[in-house]
Length: 299
Image 1 (cartoon, rainbow, N blue to C red):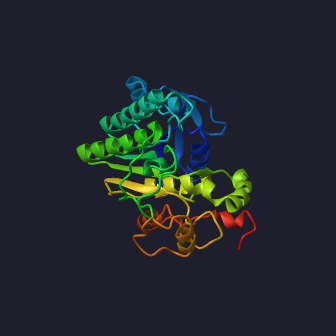
Image 2: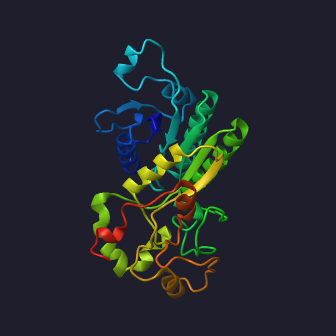
Image 3: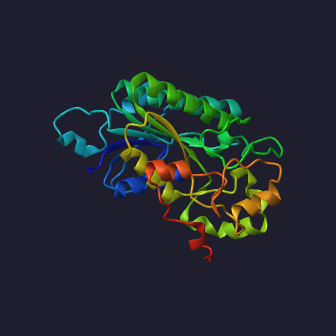
């Protein structure tokens, strides 16, 4: 399949830079739109404040680089947009600023894409929508596994912004007949971070806020690629996580010990992550390449 022209917002961030590199390796042409540079040959960064509607529209109608001026025509809208740009968690900016920036930028990017004729948009949602990650105190999940039909109920400004963004995506997908897929991204693990998993084994409850799940940054790039290749689904939500639980104990046994009062709504695979990627595997054909056990001596 021929590569697509993709505007990727937030490609300089922790998750974005790995996803951009993966998409570039798949043959896609990418323009990174961010407030910070990305050191990746062949990918230009356009600095833009996406909370401003005009800058969002302009970012989606820019040449990807100087070679664009050799084409003999003015810039055209991309084939697809991947929107990762955001204030990435709580406690970076005040809560009102986090909520306002994340909601406004997502609205502006999706609106610009739709009105420019783009019919494939991937937006970054978050595991925080499941309501426990940034909860006040020790909040239990409603049930396991966490799947896309779960009643998401965050109480923090970041998770709430992502919930609103999913509703924005759904509204535009219905209005324009577009494919807009929201990825509920788990705790992103970069290749150099697997040393942390030893502590995850010693102190398993430190991972409750992440539902004992994770996504390798490179596997996240593959999920984005698969979303770009999969057409005709309208609005969809996918958990963007790896397959397994981040402890050595089988999932059902582990949850019975540490979450005995939380209902389990279906049979679980032996080491299936409590934040389940079953939909991504079945609908997108996702196959993880980076099981954490490969990197910390497990078999």
